[in-house]
Length: 613
Ligand code: AGP
Image (cartoon, rainbow, N blue to C red):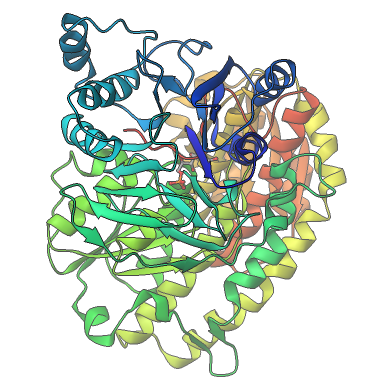
C-alpha cells in the first residue's frame, strides 16, 4: 500500500525522501513522487512505475531543499500515471499533500469545489484534501487550522502529510482511522515522518506513533501532538530495536530468499525467553493471560487475512487439540459482517505481520465492541494491532520486506503452539507429562527448519521441472491442510501460476475432474496422523495420470515409490509439522518465480500492507 516519507531539518530532504521511499518499496506501489520546498516555492517530481524512474527524473531535473514529503502510490482512484501520482499541489501551488487511504466523500467534495471554481489537476480523491486546505487558508486560517478543518470534513480512514510554502517551518500530519500508520521519528534538530518504520530506521530509533484521530505539527526541533479538537497530547516515545541492517538484502538476491533463510534465526528468537525447558513451561507475559481469564474463556476466534489466516487455521487445530476449547478461524474481511456470536467470555485473537491490515483491525474492533478480550500476534512493532490489543505477542522475526510472507508465517505457528500449551496449563487440563513433552518438542524446531533449508538444491530441481506449468493443485489434510492453502498462495502470488489449495479429502468431490498429465498435484504427506489418508490420495491422483510432488518424511519409501518428485522433510512431532512442511513450498515457489524471471519481492498488484477494505 502507499508509502509516506517526510523530512524537516537542515539536510537536503531529497535524498532522505528517496532513500526512505526505497525502503518502503516492499509495500507495493505503481507510481512515486517527491515534493521539496525550495527558494520559497514547492517543487514536485512524479513518475508512474518504479522508484528507479523517479530517481532518474530527479537526476535529470534536480531539486533540493527542506522540508520535503514523498510518496509511493498504490492506485485506488485514477490510473497509475505521473498526473495521479502524489504529492498533489493545491491550485495556487502553495500547499502539497501525500496521503494513504480513500476519501470516501470525494465525489461530493470535488463537485462542491469544482462549483466554486477549483480546477482539478488529477483524477484522485487525494487532491480534494489539498484543495480544501487551500480554500480554508484563503478564508484566513493558518496551515494547522486549515488542515484540521479539512481532516474533519473528509470521510474514511487516512494517513495524511501536508506542508505549505507559506509556513516553511512545519509539516502537518494526521492519522484518521486505520488506513495505515503515521510514525514520527525524532532526530537531533531534525524530524522524520513515515508510514512505516523501515523508512526512517537508519536515522533514528526514537519514534512516536500517531493514534487514530490525532494530528501532529512537526518542526525541526519540536513535535506537537493534538486531538482533532485541538487538545494537546503527551505522546509516548517508543524505542525501536530493529537494526537497520535487518532491512538489507545482504548476500541474498531477494528479500524473500533472505527471509526464508532467516527462519532458523527467527524461530530460535521466537522461543527465546518464552520457553523454560527445564520446568517444561511456557511464559508469555506480553499476553497478560491470567489464570482467571484462561478459565473464563469459552471460545477463541482467531481472525486474520491471507497467510496470517492460514497460520490461524493451524492455530485452531492446536488450540482445540491441546486446550480442548472451541476455536474458530474467521477470515477478517468477513468477521464483522457475519454478526459473530461473541461475548465477554470469548477471545478474539488477531494475527498480522503488518499489524495495519484494515480488515484485521476492523475484526478486532468488532470483537472489542462485543466485549471479548482482544489479543494479537503481530510482527510490526508499535503497529495498531499491537497497540489496541489487551495482550500482544510480538513475532520475533524482524522486518519482513518481501510481499510474500514467509518468516512471518512460521513464527506465529510456534506462538500459537506455545499459547495453546500455556492456556491448557492455566486451565488445569494438561497433564504434567503431556505438558513437558509438548514443551520439550519445541527445542527441535530451529534445527528441523535448518535441515529443510539445506535441501534447497533438490527443491530447485523440482522447480525447474514445474516452471512452465499453467495450474497446480495443493492437497493436505488435518494440520497440514492449511499448508496446502499456504503453498498455493505462495506459488500464485509470486509466479502467477494458477494454484489452488484443497483439503485432500475434498478432491473426489470436484477437483479430481481437473486431473490429467498437465495437472501437477502437490501432496503434503508427512508422517502425521493423516499420512495413510494422504497415501490413498496420492494413489488416486496417479491413477488419473497426474504428476505428484509429495512433501514427505525422510525415509518414507512408500511415498517415494508413488510420487514423481519428493520434497523431503525431517521427522517431526505432528503438531509442529506445519513449520517444517511449509518451508519446501516457500522455496519451491521462490525458485519457480525466479526461474520465470519475475519480480519476487514486489509481485504485480500486491501490497505488503493492505490498509484499505
Ligand atoms: C502473504 O504472502 C500475502 N501477501 C498476504 O496474504 C498477507 O498475508 C495478508 O495481506 C495479511 O497481511 P498481514 O499479516 O500484514 O495482516
